Amino acid sequence: MRNTEKHELVVQQRESGVAYVTMNRPDAYNALSSALMAELQRTFDLISQDRSVKIVVLSGSGKGFCAGHDLKELRSQKEPDFHKTLFDQCSHLMQTLVRLPQPVIARVHGIATAAGCQLVASCDLAVASEASWFATPGVNIGLFCSTPMVAVSRKVPRKQVMAMLLTGDRLNATAAAAAGLINEVVPHAKLEQRVDEMASVIAAKSPKVLAIGKEAFYRQLEMPLDDAYAYTSEVMVQNMQLADADEGISAFIEKRAPVWTRS
Image 1 (cartoon, rainbow, N blue to C red):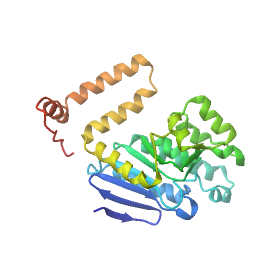
Image 2: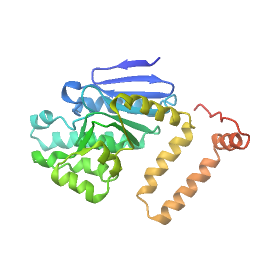
Image 3: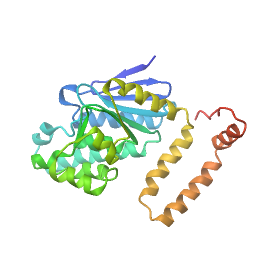
Image 4: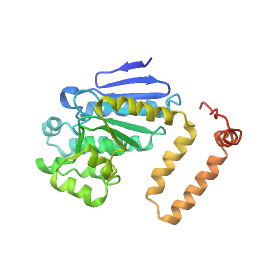
């Protein structure tokens, strides 16, 4: 039984250590208005401090995952200060996902375009229905997807992401998986089941170890090779001092299931 917390723009459900966070602007394809981003930020900030949450599943209500920024809101104000505040808000939200101690899975259906594609790329993992598609189409409306390309270019090879950015053309789910933007493609009818399976597997691991590993993964990516090995060697030393490392190794040797610490 899932415990549900519903706000106007975000619905959150909890079950077995999994936080299901759903963007709730179905009539606007969950476009990232300032208000929606603020509610997502509040939700993720609270989750980051909640050790009962072991993994997060992010999805969108209605016919699609997320159509990117709310263009009506962008056009409603002409002042650079307004736009800077809005884009800074979005960039902070994307970095929050990366820095969240818990892994985040994007459960994608329908469209994931512009900042919606950025949102998928900012999640640690992504599973999409076979009817979903992805694009950075800002160039088609005179607004190059400069901030979305930061996240997407860190998941998709350069030539392919440049093609997406320069043409605005869409990628279907199969092509997105081949490019590394998403992990898996499944029939829409099996999307929720597959993501739940993946979430359950990850939720069974040590939360402390997952948090250490996630932080180290993103930090070492931007380092030169020597620095990355020096840094991750220190991370391994710190990891070895955890009670969960001792428990995990002992359980493996003794051929039993490990019992992780709760906090």
